[in-house]
Length: 229
Image (cartoon, rainbow, N blue to C red; front, top):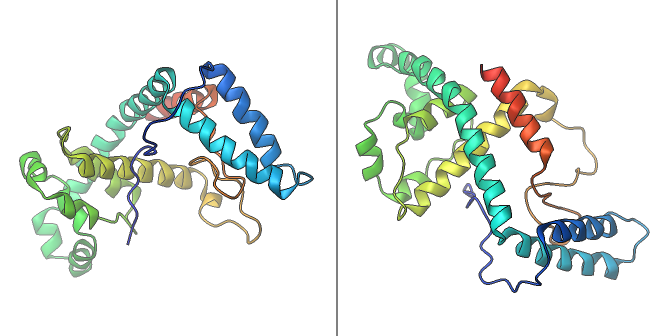
């Protein structure tokens, strides 16, 4: 089954060292160098991994870092909104009742991907759906425009609908991933060999790091905004 991202780490209470965001980021950079140092001992790399995770958790609980993440998420949504609405118009025509009834392949496609029924659905009906319904919407094998149309059809979920909010984050990340693959097909299939370091979270037992947001992220968002315009 698919594992739906939570949009953040569940870290509980993290003791603050009193270091500034700049100092925490500098420490992450130093630890990352140790983790990636092939000449470092296994113990040093393991210790660096543990310290990296603790430092990252501390950084993640600072107000400044949270504001940066919120700003990035809001900017991404603002850029994607017109693209999602355009995709919705296109998909409403594609999945119109008359068109579906005339196309058995399309009927099968919807049957295999029930999340497509969310496209154009009354927002009140979506809000009334049980949270378990969203855990069954795996978002696999869908076109980017289909994902965007689903996103454009969604209402704003209530604060108590955490599972649904998590699923929206999962959907938005999926759109971002597939958009990058559409722009650069080489991302879809990589040659066999050592996997590059991940950037989706703090490392556990391998050099997998989550780099804090930087100007590069905003530069990418700016490029996407210009493309959308």
